[in-house]
Length: 80
Image: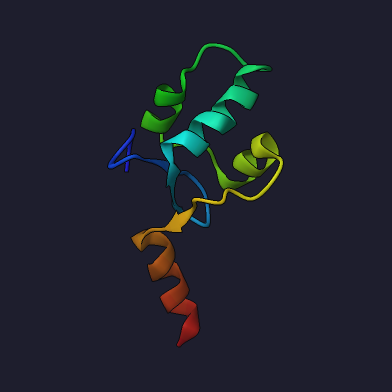
């Protein structure tokens, strides 16, 4: 996933997945206070924030996170 798809933005690190655009933009607002030059959409188009970045910017775990096929396939390898 790149950019916004169906109201979701990508999470670009394990665990891979997506979050609601509103939560992505909340993280971006915190990020933008210290870093300039990239819009929330640009970050999403480049693959999104990593999970650690999201936690740092939000001050909590993202509440709208959902896994994606990349994460599900990773877990399947270790469950057998």
